[in-house]
Image (cartoon, rainbow, N blue to C red; front, side):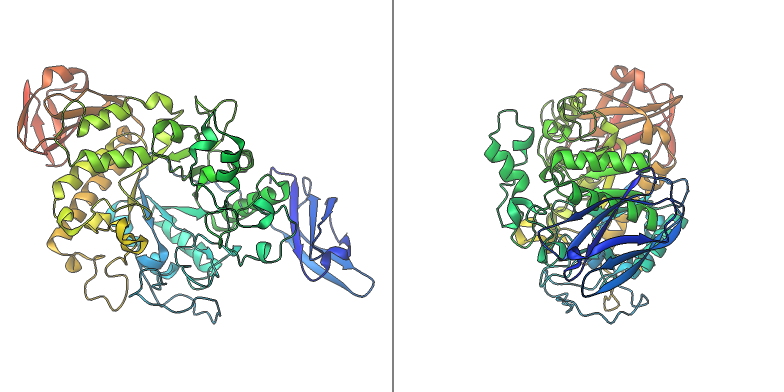
Length: 578
């Protein structure tokens, strides 16, 4: 590896009181031995800059006992690694709620929460890695090119552990979902279908039953001396130049809940441990990206070190941080090379565009004029100078923590609002993400709890009467949603102008928002009528993005003539490819 130091953390009864020696090493040096107040830990830092792959022994000797441990340095996989970018469409799924397949490894495990109860929204429903793997062909047919799955690492907590965000072991896949080997096979199978895999990891906090918290190495391994201290959830305090030290500390050092202790990432040993977790999973499983949870709540200097360490080992490897801030200035602060965060630099390549999500949900329900409806989208996009790289924004209509784009059954019947929002999502700048089930019109309101947002995908369980994974199992409305989504996704895969092209857009006129993506000699121009009445659009204004008198219209799959005016039906969409 490019990093010459290797951290080895040893945990065992009074192991910290033993003398440590290395035996059978070749070009490996023991640079540092760190002991803590807790005698059950000892931390080794090895110099492996000149080491070759090998197995050596770690010898532990005390007055009353001794033992030896075998440790292997593996050969690095020198492969050309892919990563995700604006050419991709990311599909977000929750493994416990997506699908179950009993063909996976049968594990005789005993964990705190073993019962499966689909009737309880906060219980485990039984989805697993084998279920994800079984439906890779569905995702490939839909046209997605990357999967972001919520955490699958061990969450051995007494209750409410299905979501995966209270990790109790960072190197083990949760046995209720599958094994490490099954996960590696899932990644390989996804790659065989041209689909990348983005692993969700949580470094801000862990589960209280994680061994690192249950038997803490030292009092400064976790924030606030390992004692519960509630966060304010006000991440604006970090970027606020006027913020008090108290508010900053409460945001970063506070805990989400008392069952999720907050890592002290200003501790160099903690940060090295977390960095090595990331490098190990990239190397071991061949993942194509990382999604880092609750990014602004982390120690910003520690996480900048993490991002730089990943970039050093895997240049260009993409990481997206959850930056749940409701304005673009706050989101921009956390992106690499942000024009507003100097002298601090996060080195985080991609941030999540929560402000655009809110506007997309709002705009399609309004009548468009200069300031409302699609006028809101124009106004927001016109402020992209605040971002260091607008193409490295993860854009989305909804996710597992927000209202679904369709909040209720009535809203789900209005397919036009979905068509307009999805068109905007897939053709504007950024890396678009779709939440599992949105492509078939699933609905959910956060007012009814997170379980309402995280319903099982229909057809993912053997007991389901209908399977939305197949055309035969979808309702007519679900099929309409699916067909529109699939047609746009499959087209987008073959359109580099949409993936990488420069964006030119126009102020809203006559209720229409017009913009184009241009790359080399290719131009794609999008026209959206944001009103409930037909319009006749004067095209002379848009001459610079209408280079020819004929175009391929994507949605109708036809050639059309581009004249002086263009009629657009109510809530109509035209995607013109030149």
